[in-house]
Amino acid sequence: MSQNNKLVFSIILCSFISWLFWAILVQNISNSGTNSIHNEIIKNWKNISITNLENEIISITEEASPSVVNIIIKKDLVIYQSDPFGFYQRPVGSVQRKVGWWTGFFITKDGYILTNKHVVGDKNAEYSVITKNGETFDAKVLAIDPINDLAVIKINPSTEVKPLSFISHYEWENSEIKVWQFAIAIGNALAEFQNSVSLGVISGTNRTIEAENERLTWLLQTDTAINPGNSGGPLVNLDGKVMWINTAIAWGGSQWIWFSIPLSTKKVDYILSSVKEFWEIKKPFLGIKYTILSPQNHQNFDIKQTYWAYILPGKDSILSWSSAEKSWLRSEDTILSVDGKKVTLTNDLLSIIQNKIPWDILKLEVIEKTGKIKNLSLTLWIEK
Image 1 (cartoon, one colour):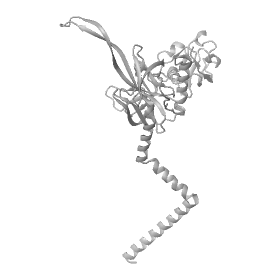
Image 2: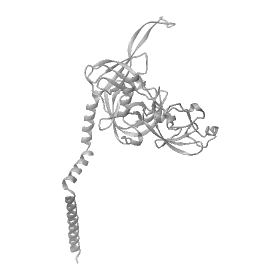
Image 3: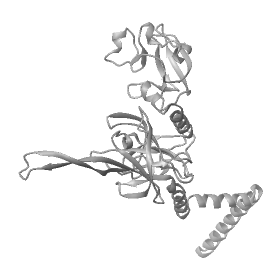
Image 4: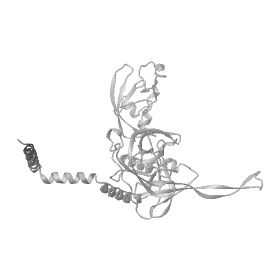
C-alpha cells in the first residue's frame, strides 16, 4: 500500500471511530433524558457565570443595604481657656461633638439594632442612628453582652423597618459556612463612606484573638475589606443572610485579615428575648468550679491527664440543684471533651460556652477519678 493510501485509510478509520463514539453518546443521552442533561448544563453554566455572580451581588446589596445603619456617637467635650503664656488652663464650658461613627443593622421591624459592644460601650456618650434614606433617630443602649463584643440598641422608627435574616447554624460541627465561601460586608467604612460594600471570601474559621482587652473565640477570618467604621456591620452570604457581625482588624503590619463574630437565627432570637425580659443579655452557665490542667499544674492534683477541665475537690465545686449536679457531674471528675471537641488550654470550657446560649445541650465525655469513662448530656442553664 502506498504512503498516500495509508493516509487516506487512517483518516477514514478515525472518522468511523469518531462517528461510532458520537452515536453511542447520543444514544446514552437519549436514554437518560436529553432535556434534563441540557437543563443541568445550562444550570451549571449559569452558576459559574461571572455576570450572574455580579447580578447576584448587586441584588443582595440592594436588598440588604436599607437594613444597615450608621451609629453616631456624641460626647460633651470640655472647653478650656488658657492665659496668653500657656501657664494655666481653666474650664469655661462644654460643647457636644461627634467622636465616633460606626455601623449596626436592624434585627426587628420595630427598630432593635445589633452592633458591637465597643461601639456603644461609653456610658457618658449619646447615640443616634442615621438610616440609609437619611432619617436620624435618637438611640438607646438596651444591653451589652458581658462576654462577646455584642450590644443591642433601639430606635423608634416612624414606619416599620426591614430586619436582616440570619443563617440557621453557627456551630462548627453543623456549620453552613465554608472556607472560600463568598462574603459581603456592608458598613460605614472609615467613619465616612456610608453603606460601603466590599466582597471577599472566608479565609479561616474558629479563630481566637485578643481585642479591646478581651479574648474573642470562634471567630471567622475573612479577606473581605472591613475598615474602622465597619464595626457592628453585617457579613452576609450569597443568600443575603447574615453569617457574622464584623468586629476586629488584625493590626501590626497585616493586610487582608479581618474578623467577625458568629450569629444565627437561634442566637439572635435568644438575645432579643433576654433583652426584652431581663433588660440584659443573660449568659449560660455550667454550675461547676474547675481548672484547666496543664503540664505545670496537673501533678498538684495527683492525676495524670493534662489540658482537660478538672472539677476541683470539695462539696461546693458542684452548685447544688444545678444542671451539672442533675447531669451526675461530680467533684474530681475531668471533662475530656464537649460535643466531640477536646478541651484544651485554647479551647477551654469558657470559650466553648461563650458561643452557646441557655438551654443548649452539651455532650460531655468525662473521666472519673477511678479512671472510668462516662458520657453525659448537660443542659446549660441561664445565669441568675
